[in-house]
Image (cartoon, rainbow, N blue to C red; front, side, top):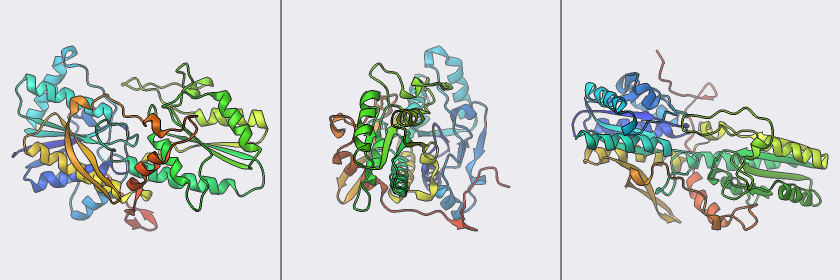
Length: 409
């Protein structure tokens, strides 16, 4: 395939999403693409022709290496939901007119569930109009909830950060000989993969968190308070990890049990925040002890100083595999990771029909969660542990990580 290609980033960023971008760019150039264009702010920016020539942004091998080690989304991102083709045919005509204008032969989109929906719709419209443009999805999401793939790039580094910080929080709680409870709020709307990563803090030098609550099971506030009471009789310092998306049996988010400001994005997703704060207040009120809520928030997805080497390497590989697939004639596919072995850890890439991935959430298997819903099994720990191995440290300048930014002079 000879011609120009375009790549965009969508949804929430990760510590390694730019490594996938580097994989797309380098592989496309190696395979003979004339131009590699980047969409500023995903498909939303593309519709405004906010498009850049990547050669003007990546000027050297050092730039490419910096890109791999720079967190967040170099090109910018968006949360923009394409309408169904039948609802706005003119929009699709506009998209394909822009693609033709830039002589695009392949379109790559780095993202999670909602981004794969974009790939699905664009590849479907290409079939309708008999277009030869190829559309390939590149997996990304710290939530690890993308179907078909063993795991998603971005998850390993987020899990490494969560496990590491959790150990430090546990250590901090042991400083004073007083009763104290720390409740860590971890990202995860409907899937508890990230919260499960807190279980990795339990090892020979750390007792681990006392309770873990994932959104796969209903959350009982009264049972939670009872558990805290039992623990306070046995020990001074208690650490609990909760998913931001835990719900009560009637389907209400726990953070909604108190006053909150509600924001909903274009995909209908509520902004989740305040779960740990609410539970911490309950604990203080009930037991009169010191209680602290800790929201890891965006730190989980932008901590480039604690990146997993396994994760950043796989992120680069899936970007390259997407380009190779398009150059070999594939379209309407998403690159997936297949775990061949856990010990030693071996993982390969493959392709999967995007129609069987888009808008489907992969949740933590219920058998990997304890019967009472307060912890996870070793199966989840053993699944995550290989993904957090080794480090790729940032390039440090004057004592701080050096990043590459798109708008530099």
